[in-house]
Length: 334
Image (cartoon, rainbow, N blue to C red; front, side):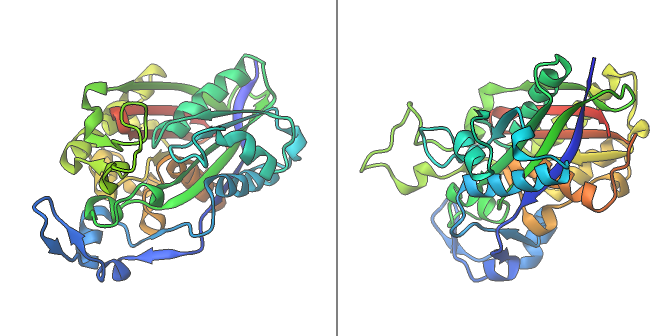
């Protein structure tokens, strides 16, 4: 039985930066309709974010394709070596067709099977799990797994809670079948709390509420109940890591590296503290790029690999959570 091993990583970030200092000049509106400003120190204190990247001319498929080309090159492969493309995103180029076939063409992969996974921040890890089981079952040799989001397309620029957090970007990994029983994907655990769907929601645009000339502008932008989301995230962060480790009869101190969804530094710090896990072993990228939703974890993986923080044999835990109050934690031996 082959092991599913990450053999290549890549990412793409738009050149345009949106700094906290720039946000100080923006005018936000609270729930009462009052206008106010935010300070850079306030943003850092609450989120740990210094700046985020914003796509200008880049489409989602372009960002995803650039990250894909980087990952394929890093794996030492040719685009023709990829057997399957899986893309996790909430912000496709079009409602129809799906974005993965378009992204594949832009990354010089012709005729390859390509599927979209329509999920947000937890989507990349859910897609990675599916890819791992394809590999282990012997169905494919090399699978490209991509997570990408153009969050600036759904952020309400008058709403501080979402504007200061989200950025745009894409990350990708090549998952390959390798005969090495000491390495590769081990297991994952996941769950959701669908009753809380309205705590993190874009109301208009689906079949429940179609766009119309009368749709208020704010209805096609992200609504987030910050307190509810933070409380949920803090809970499942710790629970997910502990559960996936328990499946392998391991504990947090066995971990070499923890790569969490880059939502908020304070949530990550609280989760690490609850696990009694040192922050020195946690990969952080959100300070310079913000929360890139489905792009968050693969961009962090690429950053960790390029900085030499991932070494063969390392026990690595990946964890994410998002809309629909979905969560997932996965474990692999690098």
